[in-house]
Image (cartoon, rainbow, N blue to C red; front, side):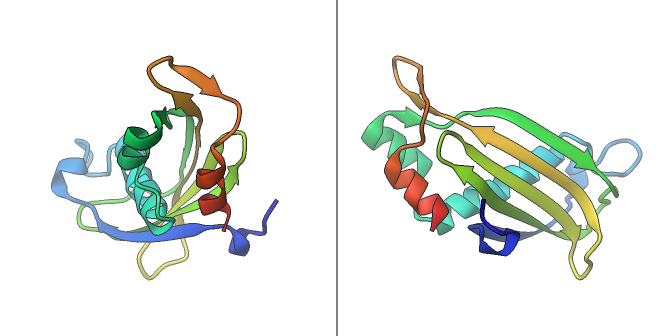
Length: 140
């Protein structure tokens, strides 16, 4: 398994908008998954993978089958933060780790993990390996 610094990763800088808050003026817990997804898509872009184009060309979908989130410190209105996505595995399934920290700080606000699999459409048959071209792009 690659060292944390050797993994393919991508960071995005975001700011908490008002509409992401709950009644206690903290980011509603479900919005952390949205932040993870922004970083995930930036990582795919960085690796040259356009999932929509890939589906049109190959009929493969990559649904998320599992997510976990650990909330540590709540983000608040207008907080600037960094969301980092890093590939942990891309052979049988795509496993990504996520980390959110306030900009300019090393304090972790939230951590997460997701798992995605390759599914052939329209059969909706799960493949037990990630297609080689996607695997190579995510491991390089």
